[in-house]
Image (cartoon, rainbow, N blue to C red; front, side, top):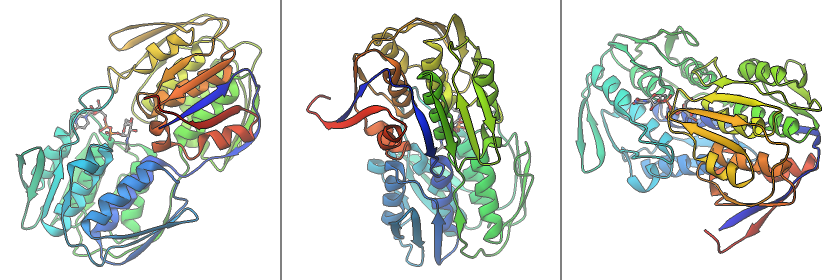
Length: 420
Ligand code: UD1
């Protein structure tokens, strides 16, 4: 096991490059199952989740090679249409192989992901969508087993705009016979990139980035290369690192249009921003103002930034209210932030954050990816030494975060530990 040790109190300054988006590459990788051949995915982040998705693809018979942030994928020898529990339980996004496998090969057996650290997170919308396209789906010993001779187009209306279900249905329907309409579709940039990648492979898709996506099935797709978009959540996390430490940080190689909601909230908190086409400079004010946030689907404030926002608000000059509307019980970071001296109360899906003058270093435990990020942020400003345990969570979605933070002047390092 490893932990992070952080000595708080350093104002961060300097520049940092943002890596490719985890949630984009995790959708692009399974999309390669839709056509036989070789693909290159450029700007692939070096993350544990990318390794897990690679293992899922390797199980299916795909050849995967990762070098210099280029992922080379060869799908000529796909031989098995299954994603086992051992891999799916590590990473829910493994369910993304369901759509392309049943769409192209007419069969998929994918483990149910089960719960996660912040609640049950169902997959009913994925299953309903695939069924509407004509697949027979049964649940067997913890597995989703989907069969179809040939999928056909259908009108699918999601009760909720789900990122994963939109991606899965889009991948299932590109080879189906006829037209598929996805209503109340997800509009996240990662879904738009997935759709554009499928179009570059020969798919016919319109309406990306809107509520309604239309897909006209084609007979065959061909491989294509793609460059992963920058990670908007990593970008937001580093901006908050600048803000929370009272520093001045420039994030580069990002797409500020993808995190406008976060930028607006940072301005409301009193931060000075200079926004370019592919960079943002942030300068922290003397005092962070309290700002309420309600998470929402894109282009709203992302749930994946909620934990980091609570960390920032925990040292604001006043009380703020943070409402979580996507995953109601995603507050596992709160008790750990309280251990660092934060004053936060959670009632159902609402956190009331009363800003304190100082946080104080302590031992804390990561429970999930974004919770870990919030603990690191709090540790950067806390007085004295903070130790963050179970950091394998952070390696799922941030590429060598401690090295990037060190380059900005943070005192943070990784240590081996027996503590769990
Ligand atoms: C994706 C992101 C995750 C992000 C989330 C919301 C990836 C790999 N992960 O997760 O980082 O936090 O979007 O932006 O891209 N739901 C159902 N039934 C379903 C599917 C979802 O009820 O079958 C609900 C969920 O419980 C949640 C809401 O829909 O309340 C949105 O979840 P969804 O967009 O599907 O999240 P993921 O795709 O799992």
